[in-house]
Image (cartoon, rainbow, N blue to C red; front, side, top):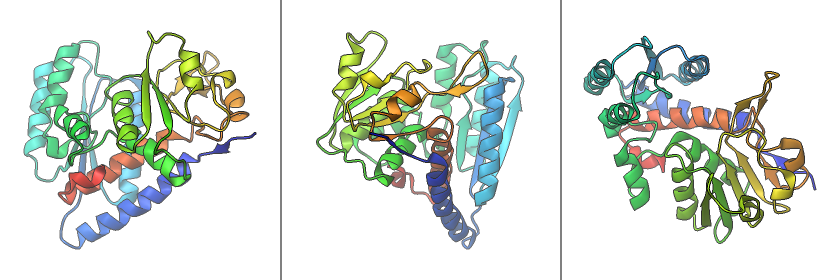
Length: 289
């Protein structure tokens, strides 16, 4: 068996076309969707991500601005920036690029994310957004899990009644991904670093989402033949190559569907962000579900 490769770049183009049409409609009402990205420090990966977001935003007519701050910025100054953006009517979406500099404690990072107006939380990471997801109420959904669900839907992967395993329990990917699959009527198991016999748990799954941050950890003999495998990981090898959390060649020989790295989940994450910004500008966060 050779897996059907899920082309995230092609799907992202389709999402951007939808967003562009919504942005054009908003422009007819005098509304220009605005996205503000707060970038603290000079992390190379973050710099790349922010440039990509700004480039894609411009393509669909979203006015994107980047607020650049030094690595030495204080938590108080970051909070002040967020509050200023909350009050700016031209800004419909606020994203604080993670990770924050080492000088910002985890507690302060949480305070900064919680300071974002939930109506502008286009990253879907505010406790109010996560709580809405748990309760099945309107709210923004974290961009990567939202993109993953679109990828499964676009390729007709059945979810209802299927067994799904999510490897990873972060609030950015693992937990919201599990909740979305549960809402789609899958039977969901969340695995992590302390899961006993992880290979056996993954082998039971019809759908596998790998979001653990360990290069090529998921091997071909972990996968149930025909399963759909979504690889969220992006890791750089010592040779400089980008690989996912899944051993692509091995898993491609067993799975029914598989996302590549790069070119899989990454483009869909940015497309989902633009989708959320357009909904925020339209005053419709519930449409992000």
